[in-house]
Amino acid sequence: MIADKMRLGINIDHVATIRNARGGEHPDPVKAAKLAINAGADSIVIHLREDRRHILDNDLIHLMKEIDKPITLEMAPTNEMVNIACNNSPQKVCIVPEKREERTTEGGLDVCTSFYSLQKYISKLKSNNIDVSLFIEPDINQINAAKELNATAIELHTGEYCEALIRHNELKIQNELIRLEKASIHGYNLGLEINAGHGLNYASVASMSKIKEITELNIGHFIIGESLFIGIEEAVREMRSLIDAARHN
Image (spheres, one colour):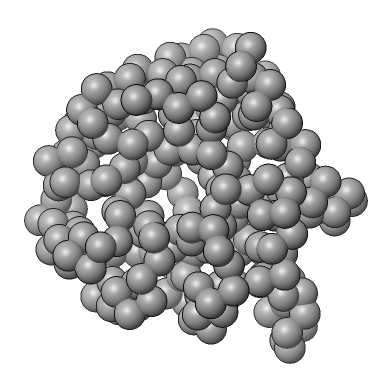
């Protein structure tokens, strides 16, 4: 069933990035999460990377204790990360590709190539009552593979679309938007929950919000960056307002 209200997940990784630059406990990602929820966020997203460059293990533990909204744990498909997820039981895990040398997650997971290794991880996570999302490109073959793996959801990578907007590449904008729309419809018709994210900001969020099959947008870097100027609550409220207005237009 297509939802009237689109959910908004706020990724607080870069609050931890600022904290880790100096050490200590400030700024506190848990406080940021609470402010985001107060302003209209429906869930909190964190990426526990293998190199622990921002979110740390204790951040996950503290968030699970203090936040009453769903926590989505982004993670690489490894034994270590699956065990951490099973020991902490976030509501949802989003499996993402991860390379040590990248600044942030670049592109979607190649589900087709990694099918059999993913199969064992997804099975273990779901046996521990954890919903599993796969961060993938808006590609029909990848979506079909995600369905075959019994994933709960997919998160479509919106990075190419957002980059085209920044570069004012009108042809690329339209092509990527069509690709995202077709992928969303295809995944929805297969019974997958459709989420989307990566690079979204005030300018790009409206088009994604109008794709009715998408039920959740996950946004992090832009919100944390904007909060330096207007505060995290105001940044989330503005994003929430833009999403709701576009959804009901």
